[in-house]
Amino acid sequence: MALLLVLLLILPWLLIMGVAFRTLGSWIDGRRFPPPGRLVDIDSCRLHLNQQGASQPLVVLEAGIAATSISWSLVQARLAEFSTVCSYDRAGLGWSELRRDRSVPCTLQHMLGELDALLRKAELVTPLFLVGHSFGGLLVRAFAHSHPERVAGLVLVDHISLADWGRGSRTNADRIRAGVRLSRRGAILARIGVVRVALSVLHAGGRWFPRHVAHAVARQGTGLMESLAREVVKLPRELHSTVRAHWSRAKGFIAMAEYLEALPACAAAGLTMSVPANIPVTILSAGNATADELHERGTWAARSARGRHLQVPGTGHWLQLERPDLIVATVREMIEPTEQFEAVVRWDSNC
Image (cartoon, rainbow, N blue to C red; front, top):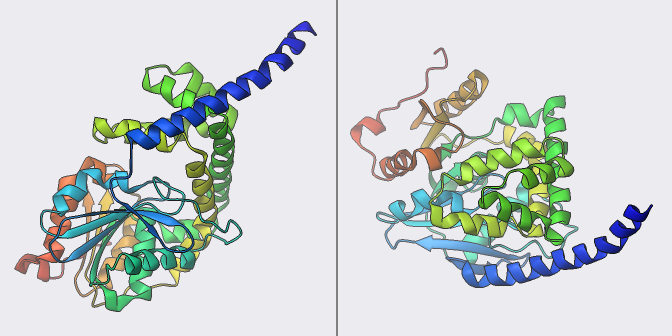
């Protein structure tokens, strides 16, 4: 009984200290890690746009479902040597704001509208070469379907399976629920400073506290957090603190929950969208892609007059972190096609 009374007395103070730690930390982060690009007001919110280079053509990079413009850090500067290249953060992620109207549903059409508004407000309306990773591949394919006159080529980097996610298997539904639960609880813990403490301890080499925080958030939380951490360390070391700062704030978790909830409907909508055959398409698949994923992507490449599908041995899902050189070379080859590229090279679905 006495222990319970002590806990009841201590808990409010711990919460106050946690909120104070989070508030001070967020203020310091704002000064230490200003946005490398600019914030563009598209009416629904302000989106962070990082534009580099001054040459034509224009290349737009679309990140994965919970990733930000930072995920293109190893690629963007090198693309800027021969193009104007833009990465951006979708609403709520990275340096971008959450949508002002929280009642507006997060749909594929809404995300496409925000990308379109961003490009127009930033006056980036020349023919586009679009590069999308994972869920970002779905978005750029859908953009090419909706605005074919504005798209000069697509590079899809380990695109998610539309057939798998769009047909609502029970396993995927369970994964979505677990991810949404993790995200929503993570937002609560971020507001009271627990996430910031956990990430600081993890950065310092501690494992016990972050692991128990993950278990408290969701059963699958530990695996997801450790998977994300493994990918973060592939970024340049100077960006690790920036990533920790982003995930110490509640808005990233709120946005991740919304995007995860929207994933099945977005994939189902993507199944009905095709890319016109005249748009060049190059698809890069990870070495650990499944046979079904390879077959699905191969059919997309076969529909393009200049389509090809390449599997990259020895790689995982985050190709732009593991093989940034290959991403850069693939985009350059699409922009400056050689005779070899102009000859149609497709994935052999029988392999």
